Image (cartoon, rainbow, N blue to C red):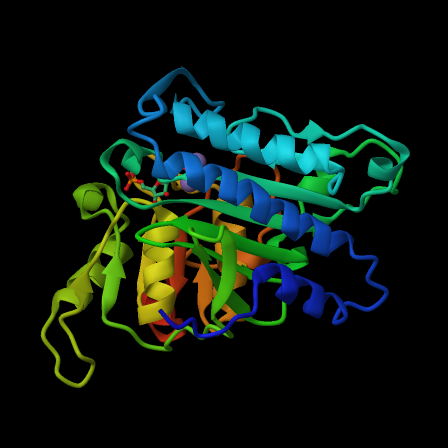
Amino acid sequence: MKKETTQTLGEFIIDKQEDFQYSSGELSRLISSIKLAAKVVNRVVNQAGLVGINGSAGGENIQGEEQQKLDVFADQAFIKTLSSREVVCGIASEEQDEFVTIVGSEDSKSSKYVVLIDPLDGSSNIDVNVTVGTIFSIYRRITPIGTPVELKDFLQPGNKQVAAGYVVYGSSTMLVYTTGNGVNGFTLDPSVGTFYLSHSNIIIPQEGKIYSINEGNYIKFPKGVKEYIKYCQEEDQNSNRPYTSRYIGSLVADFHRNMLKGGVYIYPTTSSSPNGKLRLLYECNPMAMLAVQAGGMATDGINDILDIQPTALHQRTSFFCGSSKMVEKAKSFMVKES
Ligand code: AHG
Ligand code: MN
Ligand code: MN
């Protein structure tokens, strides 16, 4: 089968390194390490039913959510890979209560990046062969290089992200990322074990036909969200309504589909989760950066996601993200409500 391009992710990273002024290659090494950890996780995801990694790990994370074996495996794979290669000075993960400080050789002390990660997104889909993912967000530390990393290095607004991306372990595995200069996607050729550039300069259609929301929670939604759902379901030829509903329950998969086809993803506040469900730092911020870089939009219903000043590592937020005109429209229902 002919590939759209023969450029590998490794070659692409080196090419793009020149775009960064005074680049030391550190960010390139960091993204290469994420690529390597993604391949390790991909191998296990692909063999999940065979290698005893399905099911619960028997513990809970700080958010009281049951940890699956694959959550724990992916968390360890990313932490081990990033820390042993000394490409970051700190890691915050959905699966770790506190951030992890990377101390090692003199080299690692000079690392200027921190990573925030959702190692395995879509845990509820692991055991049933449905698409899962990994989400990552990269910041430059704000405390001095060479000192231990501090909480404030992680609590930066999304508009300070240096890079963000995700891996989607789907019918094919893709790594999609941005360093603030557009969004590019790479598909893993499993026979070679290499990611190839397959989706260059991804742009989200301004309008789409898909809305993605867990409608089972309808009764608990804010009034504006209920009204927007009704709007999506109304018949109107001019605006191509009714829209179609698609909800996988893995943010990565729902976001990826909407980015390529056009659509809006919504996880609002609910009466039982008044702050929303998704985590600002390692789910919403990276997806928001990718959306904006691809010409889309992300809001909590009122504010731009990327402008929110975080106050806690595992902070939650409501999330409206995707095609700009659809997000604007959904937001207009929320503004009316407030
Ligand atoms: P995670 O598996 O990392 O905890 O994330 C699950 C998230 C997200 O991926 C998904 O969109 C959402 O939770 C689904 O939640 P509901 O099952 O409440 O719809
Ligand atoms: Mn998640
Ligand atoms: Mn997760």
